[in-house]
Image (tube, rainbow, N blue to C red; front, side):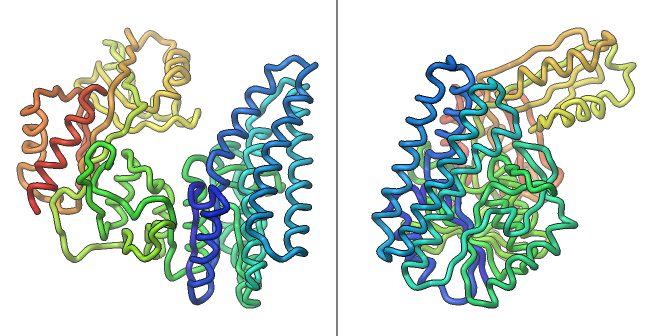
Length: 465
């Protein structure tokens, strides 16, 4: 039994959905399908939700009606183009209309109340995947395959109530998922499950945050003991670097779990880092494949690699980050200042990507740009005892990361990497190395990003065969 997840681009049009349905039909054995919203739908739902709370009451209904008309037409026309069976088509259109009505109701409520809570936002965002599972399950039925559309919650995924970035309650999932899904598989029904969305124990819709659809697939694979989790996307697999920067970037045939986690964490966009852990926990292979090149080999992610092709396998660049520098003599006398910092930011769900301390009176850390204002306010309030003399924010930077299991124990590798950067006259602002020793990360100015990526890729990947 395999879990097959199809992303937004893979289900972004009638033509692409037809290709997805063909891939599913040709795959032998039991299969579980996880799908994202059609490309662009989640963004459009987010935009209308934020826009409608700022509109005058006199135009809220008009705006909501226009948006519902457009989103309903997109999904209805897609269904009509794909579904030949009239009965199945009418059932699909009826469901699309029902979902559209629910979405319009919540948009009007949010608009008139001028209140977009995280709870309401999760509910609104859930409609993209709910439309998607309706269409794709119907397409499979019209091909004489038994299929059933399920939300993540209906498939057994229960989370806490941290709306926007909910965390699965694993003690519940272990029992729930098997109880919900196994009877369908035994009856030869293909479950078509919404990625990204779940619900708390009260049944209130939650979302799993960025990478949520991949995470959904991995969770299902773990608790159903799948033989493989497949992530179908719009690229052939994980490449040695961004092909927009280096056209010579190569497909990486095989990665270890830890390499994949580091690549995803530091900028590879094909998968999200948190989806690896559930598969890694029970040693399930994860395969990255292209919907548009289904015969391609893709990238296989496994527990351990026997052969190391290159010391460094990939170079990534992560943008949209900033450095926060803390300085203050009082920091020396503040016990466990790093722990307090982690607690303050963790309480706001702000993730620290890198951290460095040049002395007890200086501490620097890197976070996403979108969290900088909140982080500064949190720190200023949390350290109100004058232990911090100054707080400085540095933007227009990026994280460069080199990854490879062959780096473990490789003598002088860090020096060679930094020398290669110095040779192209680029200054390194900050350095960190993971405890796994399979990555080295450092900060450079954003303007040097492409130069550094090209240099490292050529020196450590292209020039070594």
